[in-house]
Length: 400
Image 1: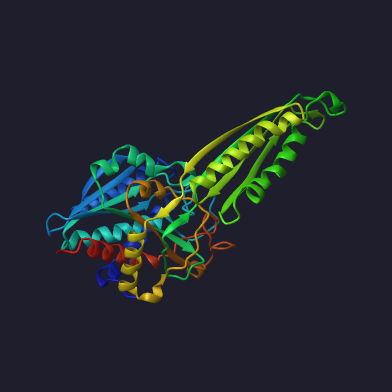
Image 2 (image 1 turned 90 degrees about the vertical axis):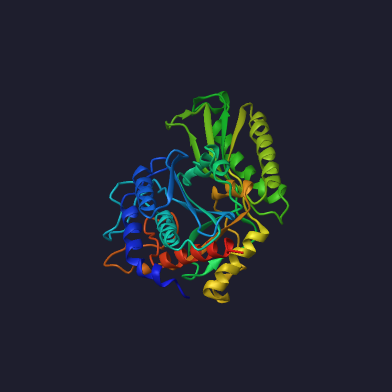
C-alpha cells in the first residue's frame, strides 16, 4: 500500500480537520459550520467555490493546466446523525444527541486532502468537480436537492464517484462491484380505523389491535410468498402505535416500517401487494385501512465501465490484493443513487477495519459498526482515500 508522500505528510492536518468536524456534528441541511470550513479550505488552495447547492452543499471546481478535457465529479457527504455518542476520546461530539456515526467526517477530510494535493499539481487535462454534499442521512436526499439546484446542469460531469468507509472490511481494502450495490430505501405507514370501546365489551367494537396484530404477520408473507426468491428484498415493521389506556380498545392503530429492494420492479410488486393487504384485511373485521408508501432513495446501481475503471485505479495504485471484486451488496441505502441515475459512475467501499484504531484510554463498549454510538472513523484511511482520489483524477483526466 503506497500513498503519496505529500499527502502522507499532510496526514496530521487531515486528521485534525476530521476530528474537528467529528466534534462539531451538524444534521441534514444544517451543515453551515462544516460547509464554511470546506469552502475556506478550498478557497485557500485556489479552488473555485460555489455555495448554496442543496442549501448547505459546496461545489469546488479545479481546472487542470493541460487544457480542456473531460470532467470528473468526486463526492463526499458532510452530515451527522441524530444519535448519542458513547465515546470519551478528546474529539467526541460536543453536541448532545448528535454524532458522526457513519464516517462522513472522514469522507469530507479525504476529499479535502485530494483537493489540496490536486490544487498544487494541476498537470492534467480537464476539470475536477469536488462535491461536498449535505443531508445524506434519514431520507433527506441532499444529493437530489443539489441536483434540483442545478448541480449537473452547471457542472456537467462525464463520470461521478463516491466512497464510503465500511467497518468489518479489512483496513485499506477497496470493495468494488458493478450493478446493484445498495438497496432502495422506502418507508410505509398503514393506518387502521375501527370502532373504539370498552375493553370489557369487545363485541361492540372493531378492534384495531387485533387487526394490526394479524396484519404484521400477513405482511411477512409479502416477501416470503409474493416475491421471486431470487430477488432480494426486506420488509420490516419497526413501529406499532395504538391505544393509551388499559381498559379502552382504540379506534385507530398505526403500523410503520421500511422496505428495501435492489430493483424498482420488485419494489412495485411489494408496494402493490402491501396496498391490497392494507385496504382489504381490515374489512374482514369491519374496519378500514390505508397505506402511505414513500419512496425515499432508489437502488444504487454502479455502471459497468466506470466500476471497472475504479477497480483498475485501485489495483494500479495499491496492488491487486487491495481490491475485493466480490464484495457483497449492502441492504443499506445511499442517496448517491440519484447521481448514478443521471451520470455514469461508481460507489466504492473502503475498509475501516474491526475497530482496533479506537484503542484510546476509553472508547466505549460495543462494536465499531456504522450508526453505533461507539463508532469512529479510522484516521489511517485519510491518506489512502485522498491518494486514491488523486490517482483516479490523474488517470481519468490523463493528458493525450
